[in-house]
Length: 121
Image (cartoon, rainbow, N blue to C red; front, side, top):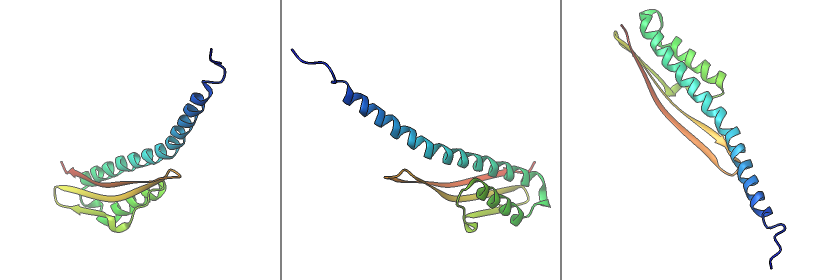
């Protein structure tokens, strides 16, 4: 007959280690994702607002607002990676950036190449 005591302890240790790893990754990844989604919503609303305001907003003011928001959210964004094209009927904002998440043993790099376009009505 086999002794049953202690046979389940290894399984519990493995599950606790997996759960701790998942929680650690979530604590690192979720704030980065929230900041990125908030930044994308902001860029979209700024493009829409600039299109409806007509000539009141020039490209440099819009670029400054976008760069300030990225800095506020802690997102690395280079001034050269924000391109704004204004026509009579629309405003187009192109943003390229990367978010790096350090997971200890792995450096996760999340690339973004987004375009926001709003048509003046």
